[in-house]
Length: 191
Image (cartoon, rainbow, N blue to C red; front, side, top):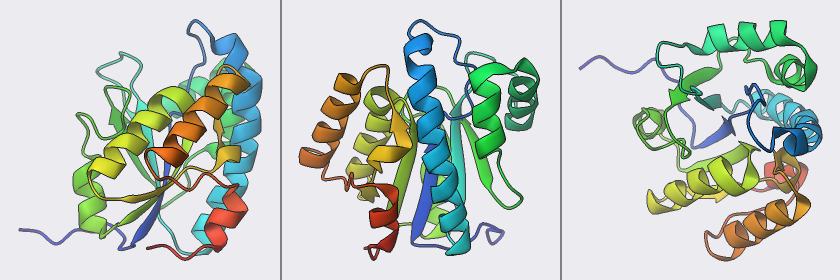
């Protein structure tokens, strides 16, 4: 078996569905909060990279089964609007990892669990869209796999504040996620 070239880290920043065309029902309500979350997440990602943490993007393929991550980024950059602004803020950097996911949870039907295992990860910081759908389902699957999980409240967005608050409360109370702002989470020692 070939030894993995993946970075080794007990803690990983996982960005879920930020590379997003925002062209689905409800996207008009998600766009402004998504941009605000992307701005906070860009600061989080800089801090994570500065601390030597790997940054891993898990993104929906949006039903395009012959797509690749780089092509999605380029397409959204050309598209303009909020989607392009988010891509500009959160474009993957050299050394970042990317995977495409076929469903809501970043774990379901993707290589995420294998990648995290090869990295030696035990703790995840999950940021992304939407708080009450893909982020919450990913956090739930992380719990089932034994990961200590944080979901910075300022680095997620939903179609409404009620949906976001409800999802964050569920993740805090049921999934035992740390949902403080990103700066507090990054100051905390990972498990």
